[in-house]
View 1 (cartoon, one colour):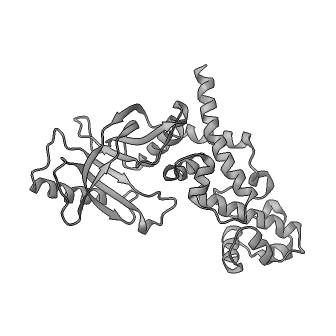
View 2: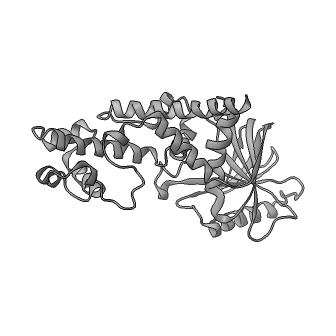
Length: 320
């Protein structure tokens, strides 16, 4: 009975992603927004993009771009009486120039060459390293069986041991230093930011090894936001009467119900840990993320070694 329930909850996630994919495919000429698509999926817009990527294997932008280009390729071969410009507009491109660049980058040939030389459909996409699927109707129009198979296959590769608890946490006041720019796999950057914050707190005698907690808040989704605009806040918990100073700001982390994943990670396992929480544990247990910010909490532990990080991942949740 529990296994049947877990499958039905996974399928609820899949069903929501299916609705978004169907909407995109049926309205391909529209200008899509993350907010509207997340509403169709009934997921928080803050967390939707990560869920979409981990379940489909491509970012939301990649999926939209791929479907547009593959439909354009199909129309180029299927109806040679339609102009290339008209096909570009019908497939959601704002102008011929942007379409031509994207088409050549994806198919390794121009739209006019494809049409003139009448390439067979199965040979159009020659990108060896593309993970955005093959071309035309069999793949563009995903069916539920394929989606479920792809989703469950992805879950098999997330093999990090972890435990999760659900808990209500209190609101936390934190002092933070914010970084805007690339940060992925840059351990030295995080060390530099936390050292600076530690120095600020130490000078003001704000650090209590028994109570002070150290966290990182992620304000943006790397798959959506350009690297040079990504924002993170490295934080330390403080008492209510502390005020900010210079580059050190003050904010409050909202309380409420969170799924808390307990991990021991290598430096290159953080993304897998987040993915395990979002698309493995949450749907299995009947939860989805809400609009509050997610964060990492770093733990001092006698078991901590040079090659393992003791980390708790906090994801704000609500019932599925």
